[in-house]
Length: 383
Image 1 (cartoon, one colour):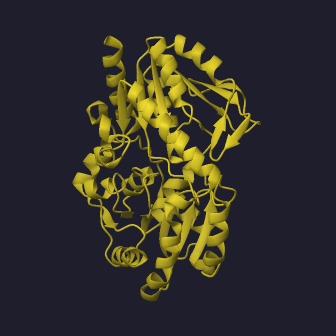
Image 2 (spheres, one colour; image 1 turned 60 degrees about the horizontal axis):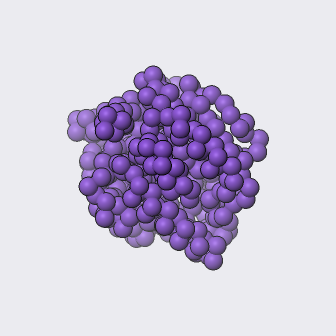
């Protein structure tokens, strides 16, 4: 099958969405499908065309940016040509110009499968307000033109104002999870590299320093945690400097975080081979997201597969990994006191991986997710 996957950002850009698509594309290519990814050349140092793990990546030059989106004048011409050459089109939103490709695909009689990752909620500001309006309109058009809409959980779909009217075409497919193998020696080396002492109780967080991640609520909860567990420390993995559209948010948080000294450490983006060691060096992971820009949280499942519990916000989609596996706690969003209480409970009485958790985790392998996509694609091609 010839498959076109389109999204705004792709590898080497790091986000939950780009990691999801990279894993999916590679798994589909491993199943001997011809996969092409159409994306932006968000960084001019990136090649316009290359092959990565048997996936052909085509990047289009960016003329300018609108908030976190990009404007690519060459998209209509290139998209029309690529759509003509494939059997099916898989669009990943949020993406401002997804509706353009959906229209083109329908004009050429090619089925469109929309993967709806989340509702886009940009920070306050005049430009972001306009971007939100445009994105919301594009979402509605793209959903309407799609034959099927794939989302991480039906829990999220039932609460999304965009997906609720189209539930008949919505399919639940959990996101693809890959947990790097790691040895005890790797964990020891990681602890030594980042100066983690034996008495340290590490609270992990994996995210970008962005408004929707709710980092400020972990900051507010930390004093209460430290009163009961003075050796607790937060280790934050992910981009925390120069995050697009988050300069004001970072400027507000950094002075507050600096007050915690060694109780808060930014590790930045670490190599994939270190991520498994990071999870195992932690006592627990927190996922305190505050809005529907997050709809699942793959890092929760990655942590659980390494035997680590999670404290997550009780929000549609986000709560599902904990509810499905029993490995952790769900707490009200924007509630530092409840967050601190759950962290303290798990530091005192860790939750272990259960047989149910192991069954759930098997369903989320990249190979299993690719098989589910493949089934949807084949059904639509037959139609």
